[in-house]
Image (cartoon, rainbow, N blue to C red):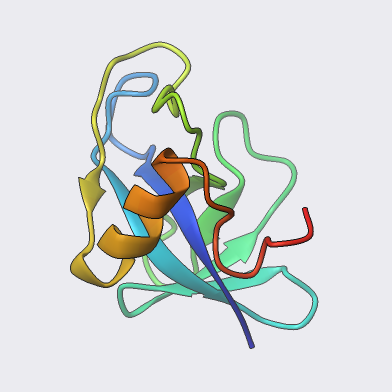
Length: 106
């Protein structure tokens, strides 16, 4: 199962780009259509307006993407993500120019 350090933001119940956000390790299935994060199973669904994954149990919508080095991960706000302890070292190295784990070749 592939694992990546990702930017994750909750969209449901929050104004555009104002939901809580995290830099976290996220596991993906072989097809990259299902993500496993913080005990949740998230499924990719291309028809959503401002999200690209939803929680299969709660229907909450999330945005998952690779983090940006300039920390401008949201489009319309300055929300700063909480950085999970198990992603902190890899994320700090990424901010200083290193590739993210699993993305060494692009």
